[in-house]
Amino acid sequence: MLDLTNGENACKWITLPTSGPSPGKRYGHTMCYMKPYLIIFGGNVGNKITNDICLINIDEGIFEWKKLEPTGDIPCARMYHASAVCRHGGASGMMIVYGGRSESSSALNDTWGLRKHRNGTWDWLKAPYCNNYSSLKRYQHSMAFYYSFMVVLGGRTDEDLKNIPIEIYDTESSEWTELAFFNKFRHSSWIVENNLYTHGGFDYIQPMISKNDLVMIDIIKLMNTSPNLVKKLDKFNENFNKNKSQTNQNANTSTSVSSTNSQNNSRNNTPSISPSNSGINNFNSNLNNNASLSKYNNGNPTISNAEMQLNLFNKININGIFYNYIKINSI
Image (cartoon, one colour):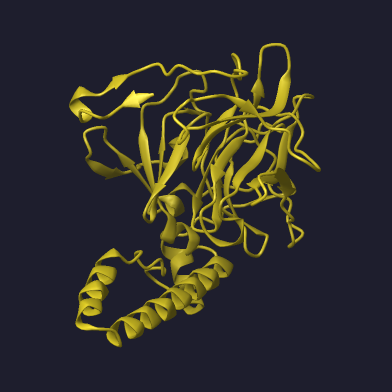
């Protein structure tokens, strides 16, 4: 664990004493923090690929490993998958797992949610895909949640595709949407406000040389390249504004103390996620200006237009200086 008690300049790594059945040596697994648990799932333990779940309740302070035995259907054993915790919508509070590589070394494209019930039991729920869209089977990819949207990017495939699309799964409607290419694997990613950041990994130009680049993706611009996602963002923003308006009305009918609270709420509101060029009428102009809808159909990539992706991606100097990619297909 990285101890930041004394600040960033005096941080240090410490080893925590643990008890219970250890997860053991493994690789290709994932670890998520689903309060109050650190959860490890899957990976290769040296002689086999597994689908076991090991967790620690860090709130207890005793750091005891426990192995879960969820009821019902369970995902197959896998490694090089991606996991993240959803914190919005119907899947809120679940650890979501997507894809990976199976025991037969085949890429996967299934999605599972691990949840804990109020009675203390755990189970897996397999996510439905309702729009007859078959998402790309991939491994060594990354995944992050933007509200209820699961953003999957990069990775490798069984077909050795060189153009890998970003795909977004809406956990509310169970619909997939295919977007721009992001041709990296074994990278990491995370989301801060309306930006998705990725670091490191490998690309297909020099697949044996690891990268030290930091890339920022504007999620609003990215999602604004899809008319379906534009509608979803507009609806989300409409609901957000309704809730905000109702909150302010309730605050205004309270005492003078609530007036102060209303000002504090205004400062703490979640930023609007409405597209900068919102509305379906603007979709065609966005497509011409900065969209990246280069597709693969039936597993065969069409020609990628690097210049169309230029405004969606930014590379960040390690010193914090922003500059645009000259060739986006070099990602």
